[in-house]
Length: 349
Image 1 (cartoon, rainbow, N blue to C red):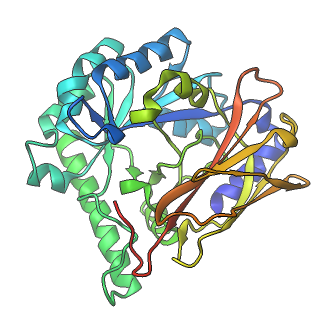
Image 2 (cartoon, rainbow, N blue to C red):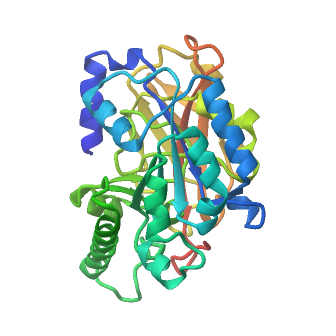
Image 3 (cartoon, rainbow, N blue to C red):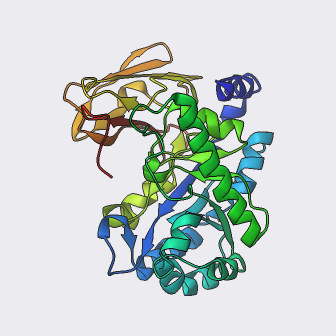
């Protein structure tokens, strides 16, 4: 993959001497009357923003981070980004005062077709335009928030590819038409992707953001950039602080690169190759998956994680963390996403 060539070049010029890691926060609803699993209250959102300010974080736009990582320029020691998926109307209603107060750059990923079909639930173009005054960029979350990897019954691959391309391009055209030309940034609905979908987005000139955790760095595939959920149980500033300060492992290669699993492939193995292990003790790495505590095994700069219990149907991940030697209180963090299908090739929302 193209990103591996970039990483090898960065390693050869010593770019891994600096953290250059960005924690991207992911939100959905802002309110206390929406599903808690995808919600923060306005008070929690302000507490997060206040913590970023009090702890000397530099909050950057996705565009600026993308440019700096591509150029090899060092980022501030503590760098964060803010993203909000779906464009729910309560983001405007309950978040406007917070956005005005802090003026942080942030990105809202929207579904134009849903905006037109359910105008009382989603922000209007005018409201999005107003939020642009207070730091918002508006980006692509597909036209109608669907399971984009799902094929219709007997649908040829090329027909599916064309359907995906049209959906993404039409959504981008509507966003640009209403709000001026926006960066070609895409957030996968439900965080779901496979290699074929990644290829379509790359060919269309997009970088894409998923929902498995971990910091963004030059090691991140540009069509599978991780984000940290910041809602519900993840809204606690005590645990969120560790994630915001996390460092990205210097990943050179990983397997499997395909997140989708067949129903009978329920105990996959994860193999990750790193550029180096100089800043941590391998024996201190801990890995977890769906309640399982997993012990990685090492061979030189490559570690292997074998699952012993079946992953559930649907979305899950393997998370690995290890404390840094050089950056006191900070942890390297790697997350590997999986989506296990049922016998019909489907899974719940």
